[in-house]
Image (spheres, helix red, strand yellow):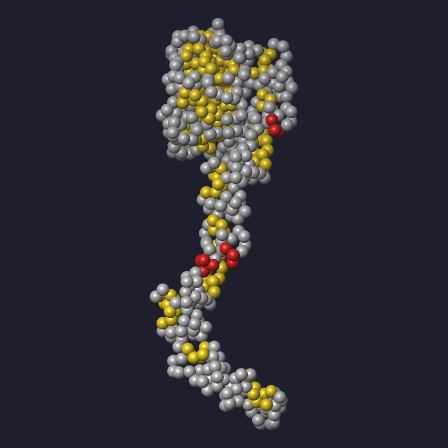
Length: 630
């Protein structure tokens, strides 16, 4: 009976519903006993604040005070519903607009209490008059993990310490559109980008070797063809040229007496090791650095000091190059050569600065290219321009630039011939070729980049858009379905690459079957044609291709002047074996003629209007004829 409300103090003594039984006595809670009732003085409108203090009609007891909740700023619509503005009809009005302070993020809990100010750049809600953080707005981040202090404090689109995501540092560069930029160029990954390895501007560089960036540290890749790391010190790259005696083909190899190092092998010093053809002239380089040229000479392209044609080979006796040439290439009406110290000499037509002498003066004798600051290892002549591959695997070009032939990535110099070399935007180059108005560079990893005119898909990027900066050839090299290339050749509007298995892949103009008859029919997107031919060399002409298979020469494509030696001058895309040749070591094509050598003799066939076959005549030949040596 001490606590039972139905029997409080005695059996049958029931307490009221608002009372409890304590020690056998029916009582009200402390402070609520108003005689005949237990009242909550804080909220009971009949006993508001004190017993028997009844609120007037329309008033509500809030906290022991009678208030009109239709107009009270502190109890608007309900007790304790504070309104920072005015209260009209029980609803808050902030700036004259009805406002729900429980849910309005612009007036959360009070007029003017903006949740976006509490949590800047954040996704917020107002819940029961309190601002609640839900997350960050797009392009912002809560990198300090303290949203109550400053919300999402970082703009990841432009913060160089938190670029794109928290903690992504641009390492000294800028952040633009959530991507790190080094010098205005996007660099997506400092862990792998060899141009910005570990930090902006930290470019990996290894002489004559591929460069890689692994975990933010530079590492030397494979040596470029023809070079080796003989001292096993990565910092100086692949420091040895395997084309020089003393390291001929391999570290420490010295050629015996009577032999010289040519094409990285010890060979008899008077054998032919390179052939190249222009529009209507031909040049041959011997292992001892001696050069002979023949054919059209009207532009000075033979380099013998006059502008006469010659239908037999003539030795270039200019002291700057005689016995010094390590590489030679013929353009349409000019010729260039690299000599032993890495200088480049050119001769012939110079209407657009293709000789690189800083002027447009034609020269019928070799003149030194001005402005090359590094030694060259290779040169490629286009129609009216020239490019050189330097020993740091960069490429420099000069001459006409109306189709982007310079490859420097800007139209500022378009239609303005470059009379001195400019650097193209390509690195890691190990082989180079030039067509009529385009250039391609083979890179150390087997990929290929091309630039210039692209009306016939000769750049290999599956478009017909000309390019002022290098673009990657699709499908060939890392990430492609075709293996990386070993070497490349270009002429006119087509390009071919030789693969490790001997396949030859060609792309560009297909009009005369010059791309071959392999897998992949050329179409509107410039499909590549893969020819399974087991080639050891490839030479491209205007619209024909020749390959060396074992010691035999095979050709395909256009044959209007007998340049493929196919029967009846018919065009063909299966390779046709050129009859009458054996023990061939080197091949080279011109515009509409082809040549081959066994090292001692040179045979040529095709167009001969200027004596480019070298047989002491100007009659076309559809079978090989022997060039007559002086």
